[in-house]
Amino acid sequence: MIVKTREYPAVILSYEALFRRTFPNHRKRSMMETDLAMYRAGYRGEQILDYHLSGITSPHFAIFHNLRLFDHKNPFQLDTLLLTPSFALIIEAKHLSGKLIFENDFDQCIRIKNDQTKERIENPIAQSARQQSHLQSLFRWMEVDNLPVHSIVAFTHPSIILETSSPPPKYISQLILVENVVNRIRKHHHFHSKNLLTTSQFERLQTRLLHKHAPLIHALLKKYDIPPGTLRKGVQCEKCNNLSMTWKRRSWECSVCKFRSRTAHIAALLDYFLLVQRSISIRECCDFLGLDKRHVAYYLLNSMGLSTVGKSKATRYVFNFESFGDEVLNGKVLEKSN
Image 1: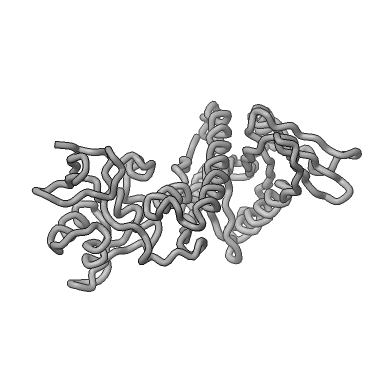
Image 2 (image 1 turned 30 degrees about the horizontal axis):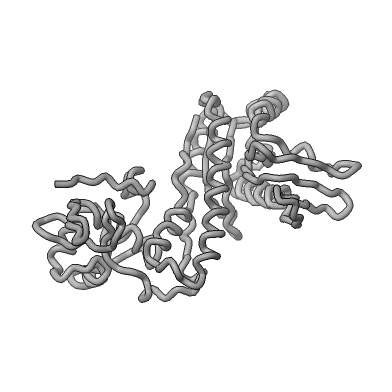
């Protein structure tokens, strides 16, 4: 049973917005493209993991995707958490190609890429162990420290090859190929056959974890040292991709291809919220969308159902992911053209 679905990653949305709002010849474009490719590969690995978990539908198996929590000291994010009344299992997805060699002597992981170049990468088990420790700490605070917490790393790329030194590291049983993940879950379930949580305790724990989820805000402008004032402004045309739309007769019209839309401002404002800040004023909206009439900005912002803080000219419209549908957050704003 899926309790928390896997949304399209906000970090990928942020990068896509960054590419729309910076010029192709930006001095850090190559670095940004490399970083985005890494996040997209990670998301692809998570999707492959989800496919293999899709057959688990029992209400006794609660699945949380992309859960970001605090243990009262540090934040930690879990690709997938499988919660049962008898145990908890953290599953980290790694979408790496090539060959991974896990060496016992130096407790390190060596990756040999498909082009035969070699690099040392962080041992996935080290990350998994940190997450396990954080979750155990949180469970102690939540007074469910009797619930065992396990962790595994699932490798999702079809061409990955895993090798170990001799003797193999003691953690080797925590490394699996994604096609074996369901069998591993069954083994844990068989081993932990006694329920440690009642039905009400199990349901309450699920609710508490959902309430403690704290999405990460990705400050890409700070990361790449990009002043907000240098971003490209305007409303992008869905058809020709130019930032060339103007508000005419209660809809947006592209000055290049004449395409019309009533909702093109949503994607533009989403870019603003993802890159600049999570709230916007009427004046800032006019500036970013290229509007010369405040009442139009007022109408557009209020039509989006955003919450507000402040009064009169100090009013700010606050962005919240939950205010938008999946079509918007997946970059698929529904257009109503004339």
